[in-house]
Image (cartoon, rainbow, N blue to C red):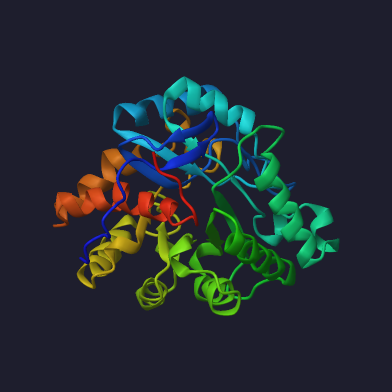
Length: 319
């Protein structure tokens, strides 16, 4: 595995739900949700709102060495920074909020009538004034949605807007490649066409990509890979995720990997019969070690790699 670049002295300052703070030492989950509403008439249970159970699981995460998580609930997904602040203060886990737009099915109705420049202005206003009436100015534009291998025109508009915002603001970009499809097109649009540096891009859900070759192609262009639906066996078996992680590390591309579970509805919470947030630390990481991945490499996946991704925001500040 290629060695990680030397880190600057000190700690990165990150905007958390409880204010600007030095990023704490420990593990970092790269793609999670803590409060979300994606309910539709067809899916009335598409929500995550059991604050008591979520707080309980976050307290457990903190006891397991988790320092922070990137919370990728954005506009149109029921984001509530006030709730995120409550959860951070209750658990001690730093919560890094996001902004942007999810895939087209969940776009706010007004987005269709906005021009690309108007979307840029809207996002830059949030970066300047804060999220949901708070003073939290996000470091992450995510999860920026694509609905598959072919992008809806409004999804393409949002991706172009996000790239233009990111080129002149201190942010990184995290995407949603629906069921792992369309990641290469997202990367081409963000970086090849709009000129964003690939090291500031995380393509999400690539543990669900159609082939390992597509994942390797994204990594070789310098973007980060979200293996972020860990434990969701109905989408893909963890055995495949482990095999692909080993292959990426063998190819010298392990430094591009970021891990998470993408808990996104109440039924994924452990007390309600789901895997819970702690699945990554309690079950998956030990399985990686048992499969032969060195402990030092595993540590880089869950600590060094996400720190390097967050630090790629232009002008990242250190204390």
